[in-house]
Amino acid sequence: MALSDGVFAIAVTLLVLDIDVPPGLNDAGFHEALGDVLPNLGAYALSFAVLAGFWRDHRAIFHRVRLVDADVIGLTVLGLGLAALLPFPTALVSEYGDQRVSVVVYSAAVASLGAVHLALAAVVARRPWLHGGTEPLRNENLYAVDAGVTVVVFVVTIPLALLVGPPAMWWWLVLVPVKVWLGRREDAEAAS
Image 1: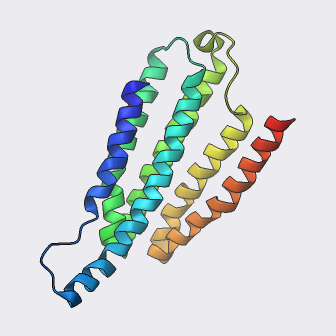
Image 2 (image 1 turned 180 degrees about the horizontal axis):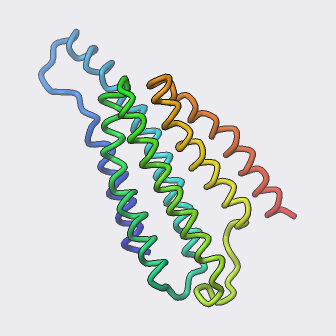
Image 3 (image 1 turned 45 degrees about the vertical axis):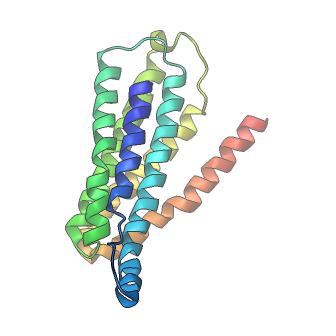
């Protein structure tokens, strides 16, 4: 878990490196530079939320893992590699958000990370010898729906971006009510 926590922490830290206002600007230049930083802040907030969600999910998956096998190691390393890569597509979206390819690359990266997490959760759930009967922290079915919806939304964004361009990013907002609804379902299940 320490390696995973470290990779997620470094990836989140790397996100902020693109947020910069050059020193020595006059008033007009300063205000213009602040305006130029807004897309970077938006991309940072989005990717921070994405990485934080995947980090939370990763910890929940591994909460019950007592043993690992080659599949768990392989999926974990692949997922950490994708998480560490996310600052690159984030920089593309923040600097070139008006380009279709930036939206496609970002969407593909997030969808891939989600698919790997979904596969990892499935492997752990279907191999009882890996978790020794330990109960999961989250309802596995709701988690599968949550991760699956994330993957679908970002996969659908790819052809959507090719058709309509960067406005396809607005499609990502579909996740907000879905995640709220799933969170409420999970809370209601935990209370009962």
